[in-house]
Image (cartoon, rainbow, N blue to C red):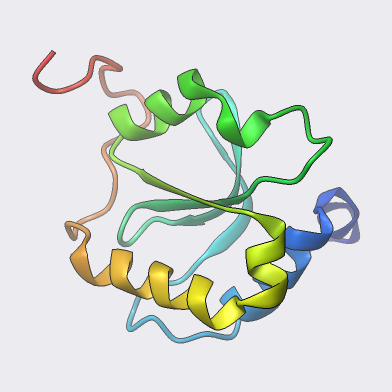
Length: 122
């Protein structure tokens, strides 16, 4: 990946990426710094569809934006949000949660980005 992407990552994201890029999750693989519609996701697994974020203080609360989370949800992604201290002190616990989500998530990838943004059942 590019040096610019490395500079744009927070310390928590860098720590998590070091694990995600080498960890085997079956056939599921993560990409970093992915643009999905109008938003940037720190890490995306399209095979399962999961967005993983590290909520760093001073990032403007982007990871906690309910409209952003709703957009991801409406397009078939689950959002996993971790605190940077959890990534630093318990990386195995964070990876265990991600593995559990991958195993329990529906297979087949997300809906197309151009799909309706209306929540199902609404």
